[in-house]
Length: 146
Ligand SMILES: [Zn+2]
Image (cartoon, rainbow, N blue to C red; front, side, top):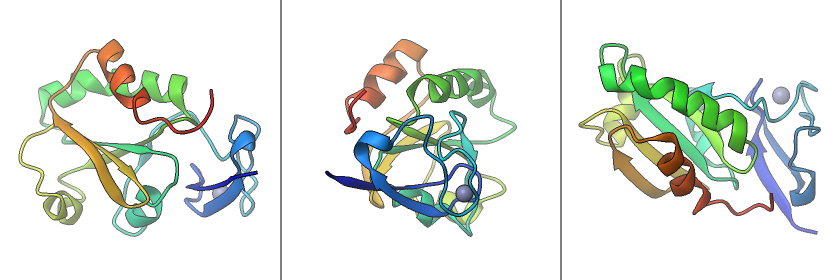
C-alpha cells in the first residue's frame, strides 16, 4: 500500500492517505470537508508551499485580472479541475495580490502554467491553450490510477 500526501481543498492541511483512497469520498482528517473539491483553490503566500509539496501533481495558473487571455482561460481551468481532480490538483495564483510568489518564480508573461510535485517544478508553459491540449499535457504528469 503506498501513501500519498496532499492538501485539503478547504483548510489546506496536508493529509496522508492510501493512493487507492484518493477519490471523491476522501475527507480531510482535520476539517472533515471533502479533500478534493474538484475546483481550483486560491494560492496565498501563507500556504503556497504546503500546496505545491503535494505528492499529486499540482498545476498553478499564474494570472491577473487585467489579462484578457487569462480571463478567457479561466473557465477551461475550472472545467478541467472538475474533470481531473484528484489525479491533478489545481491552484490559481493572482500575480498582483501575490507578487512575492510571482517574483519567486520569475513570472514574466501571463498566463503561465506551472506543474509542481513535492515542491519541484516538473514543467511550465506560457499562454492559454485549448482544453484538449491542456488535459493531455496535465495527464502526462498524472501518477495516480484513474
Ligand atoms: Zn481540511
